[in-house]
Structures are given as structure tokens and as C-alpha cells.
Image 1 (cartoon, helix red, strand yellow):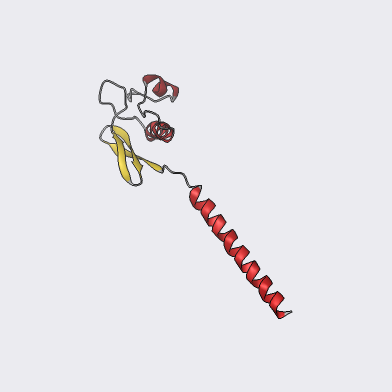
Image 2 (cartoon, rainbow, N blue to C red):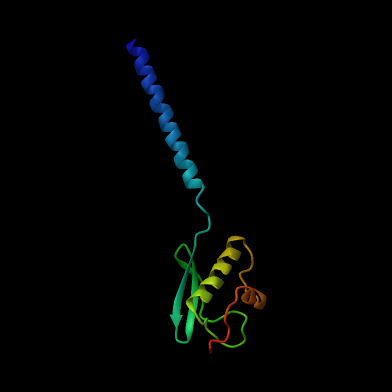
Length: 114
């Protein structure tokens, strides 16, 4: 009788250990492979953004892309919208270049004079 109880206890411990290991393995392997972070910062004439990958700066953008002149983003929200779009492209392994049409689609303000 004592042997059966010991056998059951060992079996429960082995199954619990395997279950915990499986859960930990699934948790670790389900983390996103690409971990990007955006940061919007203030510059002299407006806002810019940077994109980091594992705390290393990949992109630092002080000016609105595609615009011929060096024009900073007029507000924090516009810089964040473009940074988010660039990250989406990077995650999809696409060219992170922004087009004028994409700026229009995001309603990015280009002329900061009201």
C-alpha cells in the first residue's frame, strides 16, 4: 500500500514538472522576435522620433520624411503616428521609407503655421 502511494506521488510530481516546463517553453517561444521601441522627442522647431531595436537606435528622424525642406513634425502625435507606421513596416520586413501619400493618409500636418 505504501508503495502505491509513493508511486502516485512521484507520478504527480513528474507530470507537474513536465507541465510547468511545457508552459515555460511556450511562454518563452511566443514572445515577439522583433522588439522595437519608439521615442518622440522635441527638437528646436517641433518634434522628431527615433526607433530602437533592443535598445540600439536604428532610426533617428528629426524631420518629416519625403518633404524637400528640413521641416520637423508640428506636434507629438504626428511624429508618433509616423514612427508607428515605420515600426509596422519593419516588423513586416518591408522598406521603412515613408511616402507623401502615407503622410496624407495619416493626416500629418506639414505646415506648422496656423
